[in-house]
Amino acid sequence: MTSVIHAYFRDMALIEEFDKSGNWLFKGRSYFPLALYAMAAVVIGLGIDDHLPVFNLGWAWACIAVSLLGLVIRSITIGYAPRGTSGRNTKAGQVAEVLNSTGIYSVVRHPLYLGNFFMWLGIIIYVGNWWFTLTCCLMYWLYYERIMFAEEFFLRGKFGQVYLDWAAKTPAFWPALGQWKSPSWDFSLRNVLKREYNGFFAIFLSMTLLDAGKNYMHYGFTDWEHLVSPFWIKALVIAFIIFIVLRSLKKYTRVLHVEGR
Image (cartoon, rainbow, N blue to C red; front, side, top):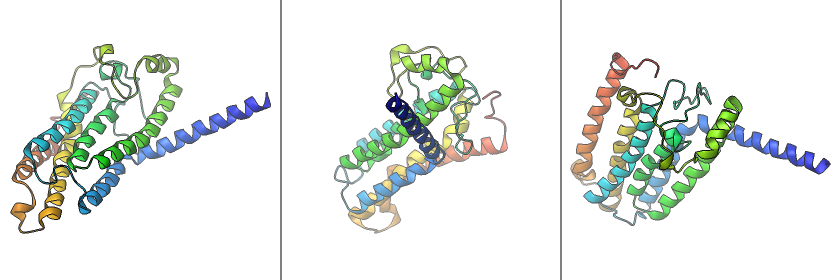
């Protein structure tokens, strides 16, 4: 009996530790990309970007498509989300006014992190090193698994059996598309535009910087015109214009404001 009690308290201590570390990682998740950027710089700097080290149009579009898939997943999530859920509540910690269980939340429990994964995957594979890609995928999983644990621990405590029933039939990360249930809210494009323009711009800025780094390492610096491929210059300019327009609308007008979102 004593050993059972000791095992119980040991397991509870481990759960508390996971919850504490998960919440700490959650609050600092905005800095996680910096580690990926640093690793990408090392891979490029050492010249081990062995697959397509120079610009290739098909490869560029493939990487953009992967990243935009992630943005689409995030957009579907945010477009249907009510206020107090699916937010950027980094400083406040875990926040949830209601339990999302319809729409994309009927097929996967963590759609935002799934979207983030694909957004970063497109950028990561553009580096052109498969070992780097696999390493980053493993890092992402280890980092966000602890965050997902903390979020689910919080939701279980707040919503109890309702959460347990939903979690029991809904996969954590890879969607079960056959379980789709129509969302409880109407889709809000304005809410998506208000919240996702930063991620959209970051995709093209990141790939442009990677392209510049690869060109510099393989050809050296001759002039600015050849440092960045023309495709990325044009793509970045378009993305920047969209970024400025949406940021201005959000900051100086109420065009993108949606009541209750």
